[in-house]
Image (cartoon, rainbow, N blue to C red; front, side, top):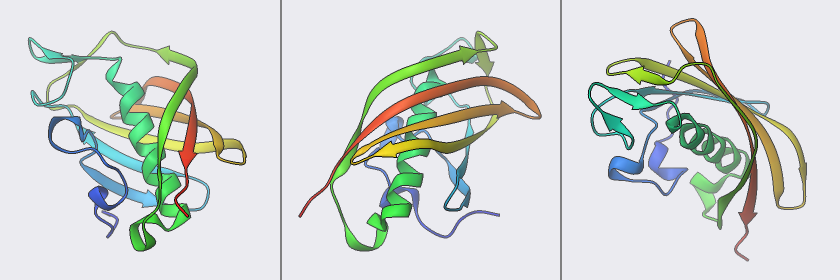
Length: 141
């Protein structure tokens, strides 16, 4: 099932930097997105993308989740910044063209405008990576 909110309403990324193709689920506890590996993605070369791309896919899925929880798609708000990568495990070196990536992001903890989230990325039923990121949100008054 594709989630009814447009991705563009939740993240600022456009064109080649918009890595998420669809939102498949959002709850208070997690967001799940899908990305189809294509030659339009950054880090593409010779039929593959470098696995480092999953850091940005996790960050964009985190932005979807945080924005949705804050009601940004409906009300407008600040934005955010990937402040750090606490941990990253890459289980493959590259991902072939046309692979469907499913990314699940769950917040681990939060304080004020700071959140730590864990994202896992799967291709088919196999995990290809896990990333723990730190995000700082900017709030507009």
